[in-house]
Image (tube, rainbow, N blue to C red; front, side, top):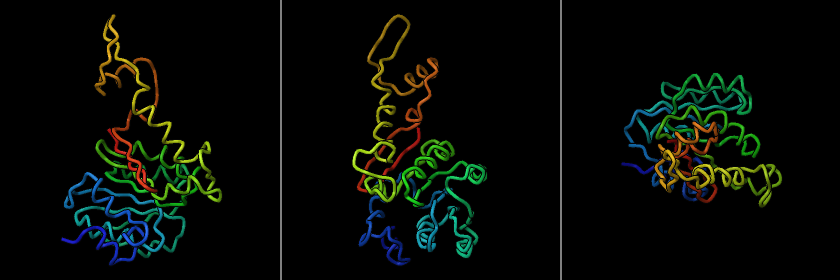
Length: 220
């Protein structure tokens, strides 16, 4: 059985171990079985190499790619479908959402901080329970040419730092009748937040995993 990294080496995607070294992390942290029937969406097709990698590694899955370059349609086949449009075009994303639910979404698109956050907020609800949303190359949070900077508000890293508070329900205690108790059961706190009218995306997240230039978000 080929590892994801060996397949990445074969197709020449920059996710391979001698460049970004993402594939070994994917094999460690993605929760899927190799032969699951998944629906995968990758934002950013470029040369189609990573789509071919996913297609081979998950042989029973459908792979969707989106890109602004119409020439990318040449990478289509029976299990790879290409949609042409911008990751910050609401009308286009509405069409993508019709394909839901997704098991896995990978944002390897523009890497512009505003774009990445916009797309995440729009598409994350289309990930199924137990599914994963991945943001690649989050290092651009620190790069000025992508709208980044160390500790700069509005970057992907700072956005998800705040999301950590939401995943933790801001430490709120569970209110049970007249009792206020330190019960940390997710279900109870989600119900309590809904009763209070709180609307935080972070309460839809089971876990946030920060790795070097990767953020892996697992939906409840």
